[in-house]
Image (cartoon, rainbow, N blue to C red; front, side, top):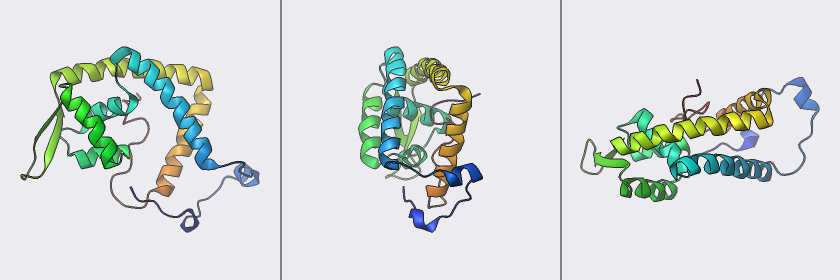
Length: 176
């Protein structure tokens, strides 16, 4: 996915945020938070299904969009081709995802098998438990504010008019 240089974007800033001065490296802080939150979801979803977060997100995206081209899934989940290929191969090998023919000889379409659909549902229940636990730990208002800030940042950073990474938890599950 391509991103604009931050210098090209001048978003409006809330008055209270305008007074705040960022401390530390934004990249480091985001990576630290991503690792901690990812470990939380991986532990809960992994215990129930044996899946990593990326694998569960792939099953969910394929279930919601399928039949779907691998490139569309990669764009929706902001995955690079090697990460998609590696995780997709495991899901296909396990019998949870089918790669069928697409519109031409070079293209492929992804769908879930019945076993993949069952595993995705099992994962959805575990995902919900992980989400509720995180909400309880951080507080629902703080999580809602974090989601709003992240969605705004994604919108500001996305350069192309192609599919935006799934918002509001769509990639992981139906939030409501």
